[in-house]
Amino acid sequence: MQRLIARLNIDPYLLLLVSTVALASVLPARGVFADIAGGVVDAGIALLFFLHGAKLSREAILDGARAWKLHLSVASLTFVLFPLIGLAISSIPGLGPELAMGLMFLTLLPSTVQSSIAFTAIAGGNVAAAVCSASFSNLAGIFLTPLLTALLITGKQGGFSTDPVVAISLQLLLPFLFGQALRPWIGSFVTRHKKVLGYVDRGSILLVVYTAFGAAVLEGLWSEVTPSELGLIAGLSLAMLALVLMAAVLMGRVLGFSREDRIVLVFCGSKKSLATGVPLASVLFASSQVGAIVLPLMFFHQIQLMVCAVLARRFAKAG
Image 1 (tube, rainbow, N blue to C red):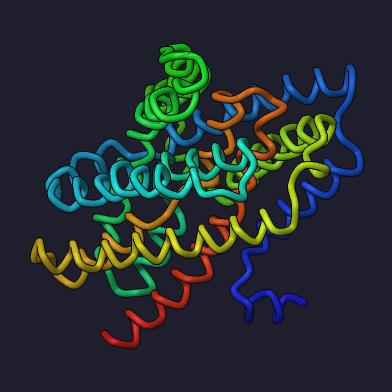
Image 2 (image 1 turned 30 degrees about the horizontal axis):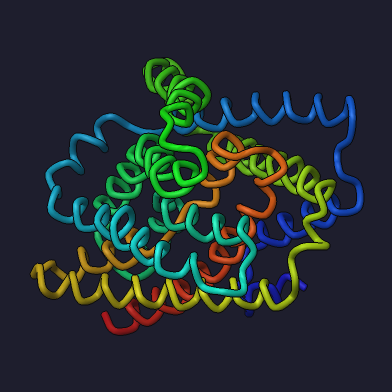
């Protein structure tokens, strides 16, 4: 089974996510247990961003700031081109309103960190720049994603509101800053135990997915989402990724980036973060909506890993 998963480029964590969705579909959290699970999720999200703050080196931020042209290029793909594509495809007929919101929300998220760096390294790109660019993207996403969500999604339903920004600041930004403040004392511990702490990272996401899908199932999610909608989400995700990848390659050539920096632009500019997106969705949307809204993100997450794994090997062979 492990060999088959590796051969198909399937992320084992995706299997855990699918299993969590299945569990939530059969045994959703109800009553008092739902209240307890919600409290645990809130604590887990705060811990997640606290650890992100503790892991991010200030020296890496300062060193990477020199490549501002590359970082701005990645940001333009992540927070400008992606949302423009999202506006175009979220109105395509055949999707329910919450799935359409999910596709739009997907395009507003920051880049991934771990997989962007890993694929850049495999392809022979500028790893230091990838670390900085992906980290900057996630920092910017704490502010830009809720703002863009308010402007392009929730603002259409009831007027623009700063409430999502306030919620993000209290639940995500404060723990992140607290982790940064404590980094001189706990940074080495976090670095030494990053594998163990990674389980906390991923476990928090699984908890959010379980509670979100459980709430959505109780609201009738699976009676509303059709197989044709799931197929349409997969097809749109693949098309969206292809457009951004082509734009990244073209932008890298036009701006005259080195081969190493073009690789960074391709892998950091084309991804969307599941680790950041799921907690953000749980804060920005009603609990009954979150399950449907993160469904497109789960599809895109696996598609981007499979496609980028192939691209990374091709970059490496081309030298």
